Length: 121
Image 1 (cartoon, rainbow, N blue to C red):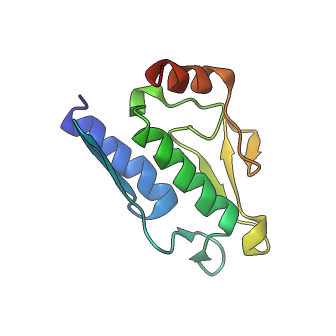
Image 2 (cartoon, rainbow, N blue to C red):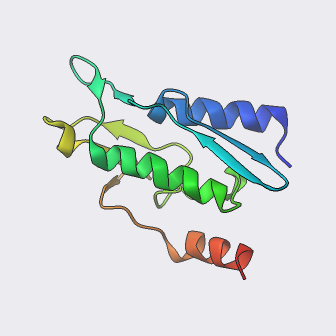
């Protein structure tokens, strides 16, 4: 079970991407809330592109599969602190993980996939 501090940290890191996306989990399931229009710090600030929105949705769905913030992996889309990179157009927006890999395209490492598989056996 996550502590209140971990939940606050998760909210803070998620809000960098999704302006306040929250995962609320309880014993019988999970409820995910994400903003309808996540913003990116472009000049001027604007809604993110579809690829970044997909990243946010898939990341939160992985939490709904049972992974916690302690399972974040800096090397794939389950990164806890991806950095938003605005493109010249919305469709060119990316999220950078591990200071080098820009997504989309979305991918999981075998480490993250293995954690999901172990929970769903």
